[in-house]
Image 1 (tube, helix red, strand yellow):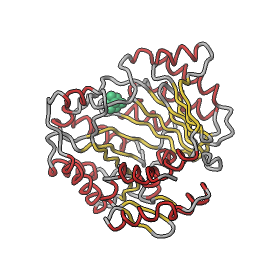
Image 2: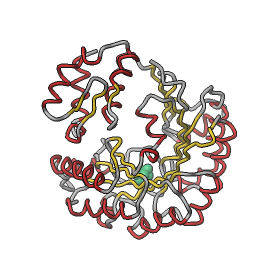
Image 3: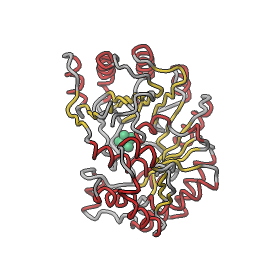
Image 4: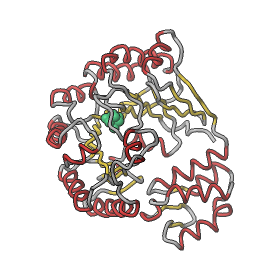
Length: 384
Ligand code: SF4
């Protein structure tokens, strides 16, 4: 099964610079921001190599890292070059991730002039002690200012990112964070459960017993409370960690990752997915620049997904979304009968209150979402 060629694709550009590394983060980024001009020239070289694709695109997502550490003229250059080299449709969603402490009103206005129409702000918490625990560079005041400036600059599509499950966080303090975020009426909210990724400084501290993590049951309770609280405030969940005020404010770009639509990723460590082939770039700014300076593509790995792998991903990605797994689409894509293969297990999950199903879709309940990984692995282990 191929990526859906009839749907417009997405373009992701990874800006691999941060002022300081947050101890929980395992995204590729470096703090040597003096390389930015050379890096952008390399991205433009990569665009020139990859722009002959037959796809149309309707999203451009500038993520990272911290894209807002770049000089604004470089962001403008990226957007202009993307628009001139790729078939970027006129109503495209153009997102940039920003971090408080790295933006001001002037910069945000310039983003708007450059064509950005969606801002995603990495706030993570509205409480100093948790920002400190997460090693963020910004204060609560800077987070509040950044949100106001986004609104003052006239953006009509703003997303706020928050993290829960932080050591020492209470139910009350998390609900305060949510209430504060909602008070700004953002169009979109992402609420991520703190995870301890292997090899990160925070995971090492956890192993050494430097702090006591929140217990899993309590984290699960916060997840359930998040879904309920936000529903009460008019934010519908559409994916495990994502909520929007209206359907049109769902992240068009991120939905591509969950629905087999094609996307290309530019920049170090960025992944692309085209016609069942997934490939990814080297996770090194220096090697990325060197390759492109010498006219080479900076790809370091690729895989062509087998039919079984595609089926596994279909189940996993479908169940992440509140629209659920589209059973008829699965059947026609793979020429299979979903319920014939999985009927018994699905019925078992349904009895346990983990899945709701009819003949056309399978949707995880809020409780089921907490067990997404184990539900998927039980389905997959049963075999196709
Ligand atoms: S700012 Fe974002 S990308 Fe950079 S280290 Fe922190 S979490 Fe990771």
